[in-house]
Length: 474
Ligand SMILES: Cc1ncc(COP(=O)(O)O)c(C=O)c1O
Image (cartoon, rainbow, N blue to C red):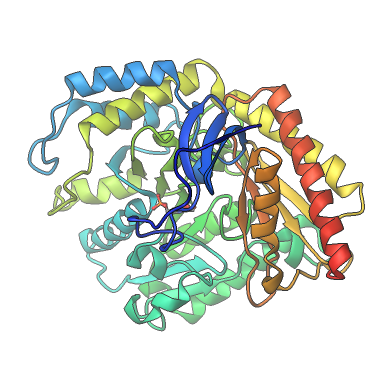
């Protein structure tokens, strides 16, 4: 890493986010898998970006083709209010995504501007679906403990995590509408004498019990992240779990909604395509609704979306055939044109296949090196281009560190000093999850990049472990 003096030192911020009083670190450039970041008056050049913002980057930064795609889209796109006049790029993007999903999985899509907005729209689509079918009492929404579905009030209402609690007065009536089901968290909650399948069955049975306790005729939807991201740290669903949930939804006439905002759109697909659930579910078990975001725009445009299964679309087509209202920037022609160009490039240049291979290699190498040494890494988990390391005080008991030690924040800072950009997430206050480091590099990474990430991660874990030992905290 080259460090050069910036023109200005850290100063009060006009932005109202992150650190409100100070400007905090600022990105000032990026090329490929590397970014330049100005921090405390210094510019850190060529930092290896292993998280791409919040798992957003797919093409890498400053991609020349992306710039051409943007240029062309800017010249050819005209804005229209989509509810009154639609456009061709939004149709083309929907068709492309549907054509590159398993046959029959989806039949329509709505494009919006953020993952939170996609989940808000999913809730609205779910409500109208039941109205179209003449079942207005289907109103309850099931979702998991330790889940994250966004930062708007509807999305927060179906999320269960410490970040939601302060907003409780403004959320949905959580007693009447929101039903919490257990997290699927194999590292901590699978019992030693259980197989993965046994654990999955236990979770599915617990979910069925909740359904029966809450009157299935009043339950509208069940929402889960296929591969939970910021909330639990890329813990893959145990074998048979998602299929078990799908079957429950079929049995009790409940909409099965997968949130793939962070793990989808090519980050973790085994077939060189886009959906993460293809790792775990047959095409006939596709979700009824799926929300996506992040790598759909690869950081070049703000775009997210809702994929609609045939069952949902049919109810609308056989019913009112229309949706009253919409967001000003839904189906935004420019955003959709850019996203389509990006998705085509990801697929045509086999970058979705590359990230699956390189990401899994990164995970394997990290597991080998971190778990074979004496350090604070307790678990390394993930799939494709989305991985996490969970830190524990004691590997045998899995006891997490006290939150006051700020393990996640300190680890992120050490990595940064070692020229690696990662995300650090604090553990749950009730001890149900430890501090985590998240990795989601861009789809273009090479084996050399993987080795560099692994080497810096290993060095940083040892550094923090040794600091904690000196402090008597480990
Ligand atoms: C699973 C999941 N859903 C929804 C969101 C919200 O997306 P956005 O931040 O684009 O609103 C996120 C963001 O990280 C997410 O991880």
